[in-house]
Image 1 (cartoon, rainbow, N blue to C red):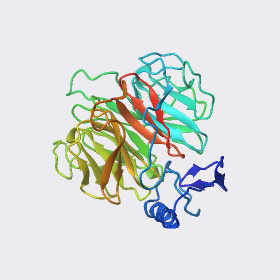
Image 2: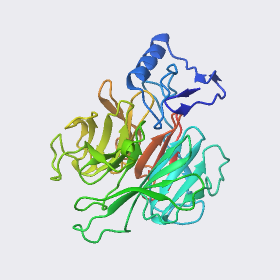
Image 3: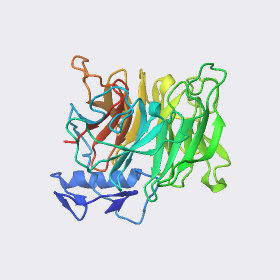
Image 4: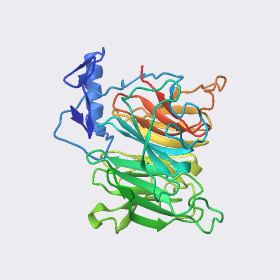
Length: 365
């Protein structure tokens, strides 16, 4: 079964690719309604001819393993061998082929890991390098799961020594088995760009979205990425108004092209409708939120590095709750400083960590 670009492979407890839960009939119907309403996508490709499916994440009161598993780089710390990472900034889950891609920033490479291969108890999942030559501090990655083409956001320099000389961002296209990528587009960022996290993703039309210091720019596939428009942000002043963004370090695109944005330096989560001139604040007074994603119910998930926690935001009742972490800050997960976040087709959560350069997995219960 495939829905919203994700192929669901039958497994134990599945019938016809649809998993049945011990839910009351009204709950199931509500799940179907939510899926129809939000049309969430895990990739840029959507088959709208298919019927809705029952989301593997319960609509309410879903729970995850609190301790998590160190999936990659169990030895922790910055290293460059095949089972290690160094300051990974982003990850991408290929739910069709069950692969995990990681932007291994300080090692200037993209690593690929199988999510179904046996895990070495000592070393964790062993990866392979699928892109490296010519990459400089890769920040973010998107994979076209139909072709295995990789879209990689990187910089033209390793570090910013003068804020008045910001980095130039580039988006490189790497076809499967390429030895070197091709630069699709590049642009000099605004003042100070390159000192914080940067992010890219693609929508269902293969337009490329790139977060800069004060904007999210949308590069148009219809022009072969030679032209761009503003998708969000309207000022370089870095203010806190509804039309401003200040270091939009991660974002998620719904099928209707609505953006959900981590507005890092404004300490908030913004909702920005397609073609809108300003956004709406969903969550505010955050200290250091960094990553964001969504599940197939339409719920938003974001990481907060300061709180060392993962939060879920329900966009139906506008309520949020901590799903991984400790609300009382008494029993912190050791070295758990979550950054990027993604959810696989079964509802399991994956995050990069800043303290130990690891990938952690939190299984849904």
